Amino acid sequence: MRRICGFFAASIMFSLVACSAVAQTYPARPVRMMVPFPAGGGSDTMGRIVGSKLSERLGQQIVVENRPGAAGSIGADIVARAPADGYTILLGSTSELVQYPNVNPKIPYDPVRDFAPISLIGTIPLVLVVHPSLPVKNVKDLVALAKARPGEINFGSAGQGATTHLAVELFILITKVKLTHVPYKGSPQAVADLVAGNVQLGIPTMPAALPFIKSGRVKVLAVSTARRASNLPEVPSLNEAGVKGYDAVLWTGILAPTGTPGDVIKRLNEEIAKVLALKDVQDALDRQGAETQSSTPAQFSAFIKAEHAKWAKVVKEAGIRIE
Image (cartoon, rainbow, N blue to C red; front, side, top):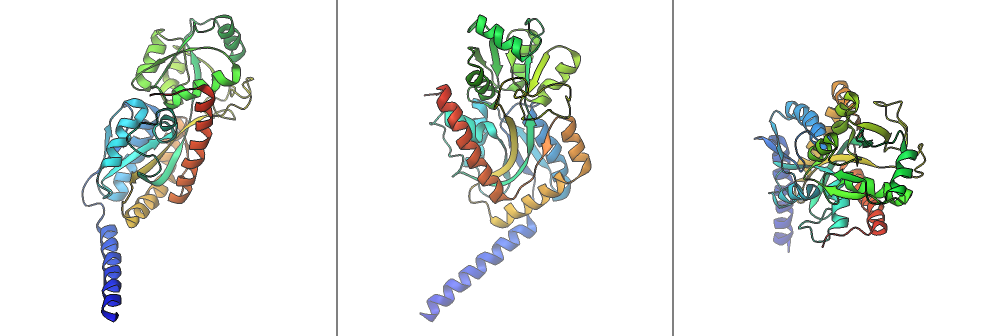
């Protein structure tokens, strides 16, 4: 019995020493950060800003890899299947972790079971924008026009079940209008077609839309957050503009495959918190309309579960389903 107990004690001690050794040597090579959306979108921009500084702190390059498609689920699945060694991490977001899983029950990964949350990075406001040819000056005009022309106004999104899709569905539920959805393979394509006038409306992220708002190529009517955004202080929130109860953001965070050593998770969490505390990082994210928000792994896990419940209700009420 003593030999057995001694064996287990030695095994536990060996495991602890091994984990400590992993943490001390990690990372020994570049780390791949999977961004499940095209380059140029809100999530991608945040990931590259944070990834650059994280590379400096870790002493190894953070290699950003864009794998867009299916509302971010393609890139997320790659990470879920990757070795749990800390060398493949996911720049996760609202879309592929809580919204698309509610829309498509057949996705190949479980957003809770298959990922180990590391830290939130921040939140990005969305903006309700229309093509200048649409004869509306504000949200009230848009709602009136949409009710007068049910189904005739098209809106673009980053894909079926993406944040930029469900943000419009929430608008539709509250205002009781009928709009026609045109899904794209990523936000940049959806915004480009909005600028070209191929779709009339969208609720993209602020980083994706801001250059076109400033150049006057799209008209901004409102921001998606509960209060006004610092980058567009003259623009009302949707709630303020009469869409009562509206509040939606794109949040991003870093996750790893389930089974990643706890010491690696802890190291990444600590370094991400230090990166997000840097004034130049905060300023860079602020210029994109993003607000930094770090967390512990446990806080991030609880946040994901709460967001899942919130958007499950929207998906159910809107009757959205991919079979």
